[in-house]
Amino acid sequence: MLNFLIFGPPGSGKGTQSVKLAEKFNLAHLSTGDMLRAEIAAETELGRKVSSIMAKGELVPDEVVIEMIAGKIDRAENVAGFLFDGFPRTVEQTVALEKMLNDRKMKIDSMLVLDVEHDELVKRLVGRAELSGRPDDKDTVVIENRIAVYRGKTEPIISYCRERGIYQPVNGMGSIEEIFDRLSVHVSRLAN
Image (cartoon, rainbow, N blue to C red; front, side):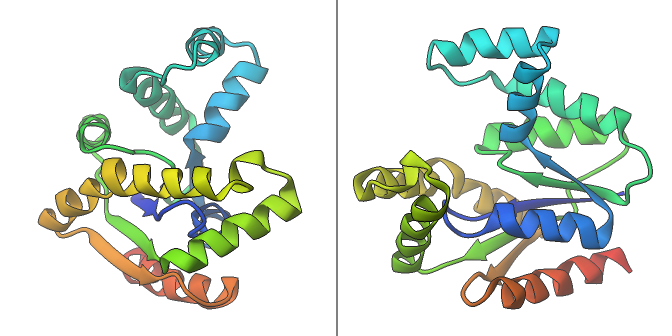
């Protein structure tokens, strides 16, 4: 099983690219945001626990997210691996994810990082707000804060993964198809 982390700041296109990569390479796309919303909608025990945490405006604890991901991995069938989108967000979460994967005789094979110029990120997010009506993408102050949070909290994972030899930067500028082709080259290299 191959396991990929896909990273990039808000607006880098990781969600769009994740869906395409998962389909092309038969990977289970694990988006923690989608998974949390699905647990809440299904009113599972985990969903109820998560809902009460999120209702208070608090972050879902790492161990709960890891438990949710482990359940998805354990139930997955007929996939070539997993593509992690939106998790981990900190070095501590990366360590916890590695431990959980190691317990299953798996590992993180590559961290794909979409590099996108700052002005392009802002332009994409504002454009996405117009198309999807996402309120968090309309306000440039909010956009700048989200990018700053990514840089401060999430980017340190890059150094951690670089030390392990699994960091792979990918040019995230250009059309969706051009970026997808670049990502596909890296995934194909490990898949074959």
